[in-house]
Image (cartoon, rainbow, N blue to C red; front, side, top):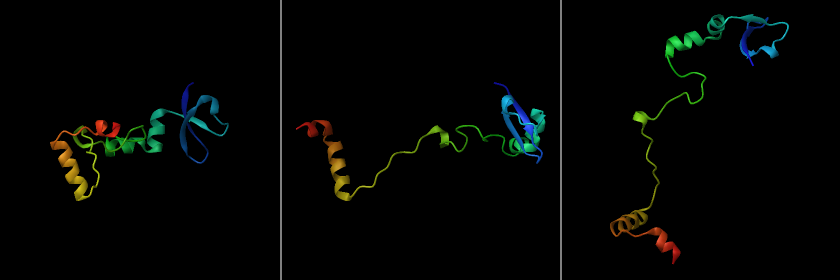
Length: 95
């Protein structure tokens, strides 16, 4: 499957398969496509990101945010007690 760049009568450009070419479309070069579609401008302005998968903001320094939940004071005290006394939750649930 070979991709080509085409421009229709209205001036719109698109990348498509050669087998999908319509009679009213003309084949253009990749450079012409990038200029008309705005990809050259985007690359100069931002230098990264774009249409590719996974583009966008990444976690700072590669660190994922910590998981946090809201608990009441009573639950917080129980969690603190369980950690200090090394209580195994799995063994409590078995009994």
